[in-house]
Image 1 (cartoon, rainbow, N blue to C red):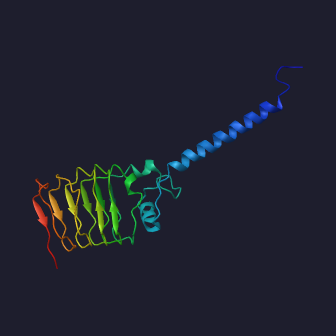
Image 2 (cartoon, helix red, strand yellow):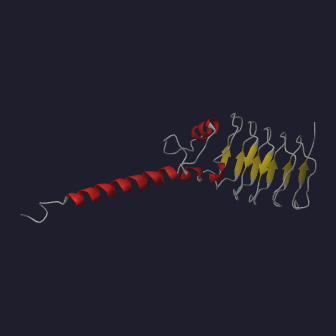
Image 3 (cartoon, rainbow, N blue to C red):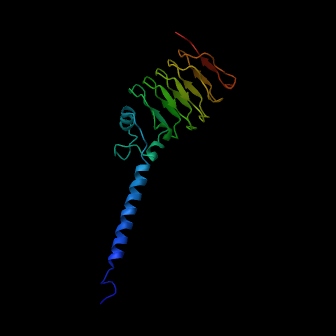
Length: 180
């Protein structure tokens, strides 16, 4: 009898279990890389813009990190959940949608943001330290907090702002607070 002619049933079962475990781990890792984008219109716009480079109908974290400019304006979007994975964005235009909350925490490369003409009651810019241009006019904002001192252009008219602390805006050249 040759040495490899007889295989132990325990060894075969163990190899099968290891193969199954490896398959489950690999599929879990692949799923973990997909960005959760619950708003169907936002996801459809990203796909239409070609962000889904592997054309699997999903946006992977690696795909989200590629663009430096993103324009999802006038797309009937109500939720930008998933935008936090677009960590290399320098320019974001999301005007003329139905956004009520916009959390851009940690998008440290963002320089230009236009989120005007939405329904924003909350705008979180914590950690957005390179922001130069902020247009958030025609929303429902009552306060603007966390605006970086690097902002040079601020357009925030037609909101419900009760006050604006501009002490930190030492580089600002233009602050527009017009009301209609």
